[in-house]
Every structure is written in C-alpha cells, then in structure tokens.
Length: 102
Image 1 (cartoon, rainbow, N blue to C red):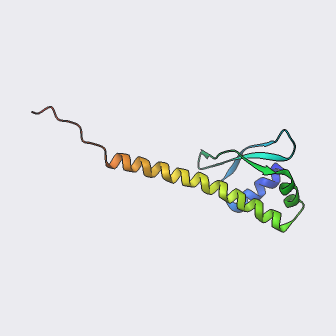
Image 2: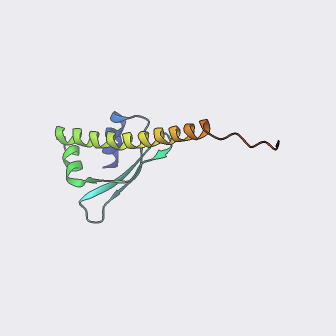
C-alpha cells in the first residue's frame, strides 16, 4: 500500500514524502502523515476500502485519494505561510529598545 501511495503522492507533489503510514487497529483504514519542506502535517485517517479501490484501478477512487493528499499538503503549506507571516509581523512591529537618556 505504501508504494502505491508514494506513487500517487509523487503525482501530486514530487517534494512531499510520507512520514508515517500505519494500518488502523480496526483494519478499516490507514493513518497517514505527510512531510513537505521539513514540515510535518497532521496525521489523517484514510479508508482502507477507498485505498483498495484506488489500488485496483478505480478512476474515481484514485482521483479521490489524490484530492485528499493535495488537501493534506495544502494544510501544511498554509500553516507554513501563516507562521512566516506571523514572524514577519512580529519583526516589523518590534518596539525599539528604551534609551537610558532622561
């Protein structure tokens, strides 16, 4: 399953990678966590049935998995953009140091 997901992920973004992939204890899904540009995404659960259909060549299931992977990557990129904007605002509006002059 991991090789299949890696191939779909490469189609979505060649710089992204799967940081973790584990089968859920109930057997009904997989938990996947992506990494891109050194930033980890949140672990998300994907349906085992959907992944099996995609692996068997179902075009709708393949498209659905690609969309889910894209959304996971977008979440990481959005968080990175917010963090860098927050840092830029903080640096821009930093108060000047107080002088010792009366």
